[in-house]
Length: 124
Image 1 (tube, rainbow, N blue to C red):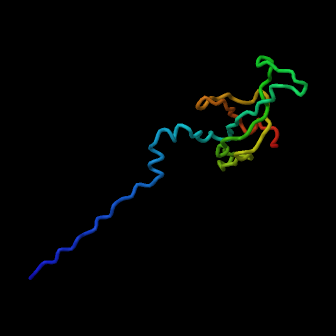
Image 2: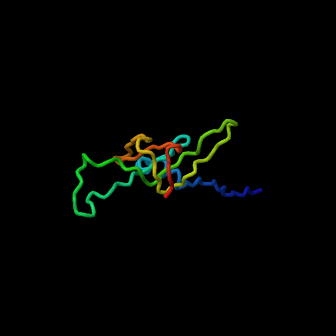
Image 3: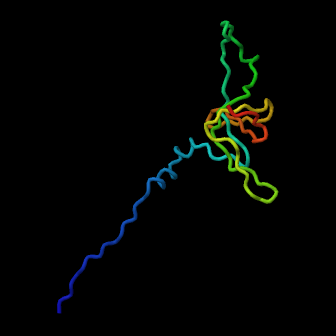
């Protein structure tokens, strides 16, 4: 009696592109992440450096901007019944906020403001 030799195919695991991107430190370095709780990460919008009359405003006399564009939003804060209350702004919204109600944060050399939802005054 003759034994038949069958070739057995061993499945080859494919490496997904997502795993490759996660292991690449350059891709992770540029990612901003997610703010904690009801905090919002905002890129400040700078005012014009030259007035409409052509007067140049020096850096020392400029006030900090009170508006910016939302870059990242936290999941929200927990209520009294421990339910998650989502944040009312979305990424890409332009907001106005309290003048002294933020923390300055530098990520990859760029200045951002970390703001609680309570300090947001207006959505433009």
